[in-house]
Every structure is written in structure tokens, then in C-alpha cells.
Length: 36
Image (tube, rainbow, N blue to C red; front, side, top):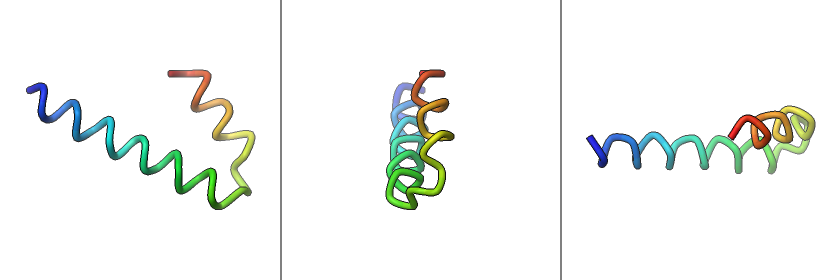
């Protein structure tokens, strides 16, 4: 189970990086970070 959670966290981190690189979703990224 721990492995699965780590995998999910990794995917979430990658998605955040993608959003940040895109730049368009800057506000979205801030909201996402605040949720965490």
C-alpha cells in the first residue's frame, strides 16, 4: 500500500511540474499547492 501511495504522490508532483512549466496555469498551481 505504501508503494501505491508513493507512486500517486510522484504522479501528482509530475503534474505540478508540468503545470508550472506550461505557465498558463500559474493560479491553478498556487491553489493546488495550497490544498496540499
